[in-house]
Amino acid sequence: MRSHSTQIPENSKLSWMLLPTKKNTDAVQSTTDVLTKAGYIHQSQSGIYTLMPLAQRVVTKITQIITEEMERVGGQRMSMPSLLDPEAWKKTGRLKSTGSELLTLTDRKGAQHILAPTHEEEVTGIVKSMVRSYRQYPLRLFQVTQKFRDETRPRAGLLRAREFIMKDMYSFDVDQQSAISTFHAVEQAYRACFDRLGVPYIVADADSGNIGGKLSKEFHFVSAAGEDTVLTCKCGYAANEERAQGRGAQGVHVYSMVGDEDRSVVVPAMRRPNMLKIKQAWPDCGELTLERKMGEVTDLRRRIALAGSSGAHKYLVDSAVNGLEIDRIEDIKVAQVGDWHTAQSGDACTKCSTGTLESQTAIEVGHIFYLGDKYSDALDLLVQHDGKWLPVQMGCYGIGVSRVLQAAAECSSSSRGLRWPVSIAPYLATLVPLSGNMEHAASVFATLSNICVDNVRVFADNVIVDDRSYLSPGFKLNDAQLLGIPITVVLGQKFKQSGHVEVQLRVPRLELGTCVAGVEVQGDGYEYKAFVHVDRLAEFLVCALEGQF
Image 1 (spheres, one colour):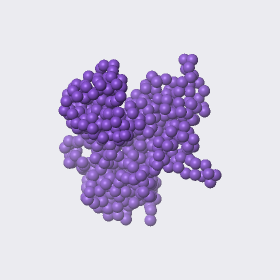
Image 2 (cartoon, one colour):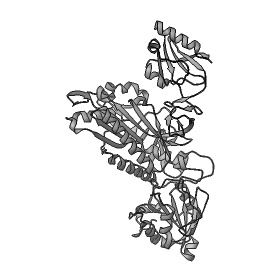
Image 3 (spheres, rainbow, N blue to C red):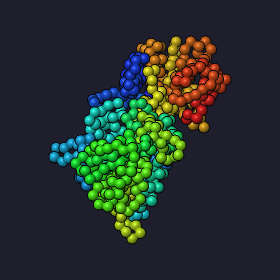
Image 4 (cartoon, rainbow, N blue to C red):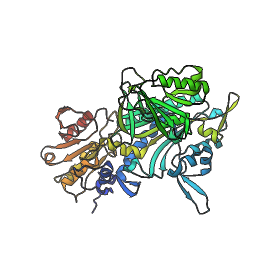
């Protein structure tokens, strides 16, 4: 039977929570398995998950951080429908280009609808119908909502799901200069978001993909579970493998287009042509095949000079190939110099003179785009400014909220369980009364709940009490570790004898010495433990977690 108490709110008791934890093991298991065993998520069907109460608290905290930073940069929160009219998608060309990943349905009247994966077309139509003057710009509109994608092979839990939660913001400016300023302002807001989320991240130059646009950056958590490869240099340069630039080995490889012998791509030896980059110059480019390997560029130089005279052959020449000297007018007509190869780890960095690129596997959790007029032009969203009617300049900015939840877990979990950053943990502390100490739980709960940092009661509504009398002490302590709540306070035998509680701290990247606030601390870098008198509990926690709130 559940007991009722006026001292500890019912929603702060684990006995009142739907928390279907399962026994943890030391065996190697995926983070999705850990989240499932810890009762955070439940798989309803392939690629579709229920967020259980603890996960919903994590999502709420992530959303709150994002909302605060988006509003700080001028964002206005709204909510757009999940069912979209495909007509606008036809006009922008995305109905066709998105392909089979687009989830669609037909209603009883035979009308077709799109289950929204993103809202560029919808928000453009809204602004077109409501804004009448350039004086109403700029606009920055955002939402946090469910999105849908028909994944071919859903995997990795919330990282590749068919239904997911996303924050997407859309900006509207009267000219390019203002739009790019907005892009950089939102980039800074994103950095503030990810600083507060408490997981190390990388900001990388990126390809715009099907969203489109002329400028984009990705935000990544470094993790072996990721599907992206990011190349970084100690100088601060970082780019997705698809966009990274580097200088590699000497020599030249020449590739010819299958079915078109009059077009060739020249890249450094031992480097692959990058089709995403090449298609920006030749949108119709198909398969490429290796034509020849050359140690010297003299012969190739003669071929380009000959082509320049006849105009019969076209080249894409990688700027990392030395010695070709594509400077004559005749050469420029047939040879377009640019970055056409895929960089790799060990390449020299093109942004500095001394660094080399290093490869890191990462999880993309955010992406920002300067769109230009891709959508406003197609959907006829115009603004009259300086005597001219021109397409409104747009940007879009996404963060995968449910993706951040799992990615954060990926970056800090182990066979012992989860470890949440303080800023997004479902609760800051779990109180575990053992040895008949339940009668004292209310007073310790009050002590924790009233802890203040900078005059803010940061623990208010952030303490959960494990009052499940039907579980053994061992199961409760195992659950405390599995759930990943940063602070565990145990009321055991020492509390009965001397008023000392056992404090266990599991906080990612927390580094403590052997003494904190005059209390001896033991730990291995993953977990720290200390016995603290209950009267000094607040002082100890504030000192131990300084800078975490």
